[in-house]
Length: 102
Image 1 (cartoon, rainbow, N blue to C red):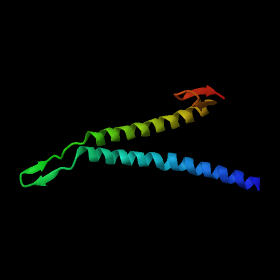
Image 2: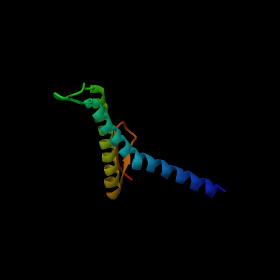
Image 3: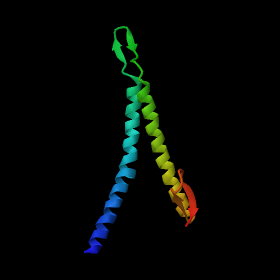
């Protein structure tokens, strides 16, 4: 019975990591695109031409913040892959991640 508990615990962790890294980063990227679009404002078209909408700096700032989170996630993933390829591991013991020998 303990083996089933271990298997379910491992499956739950894999599912969570897959959701966060597999679907989470693309969702954050899509929210960043949507936030930038909202920050640019809606343009209106009339007989005289196109009038730009009011800009929303908060939307632009949130969009760039979400892009930064996505880039940090990708860089941490690449660092993890490269570190394990060289026989090291990625440690989060400090405030910033470091590569330490196994």
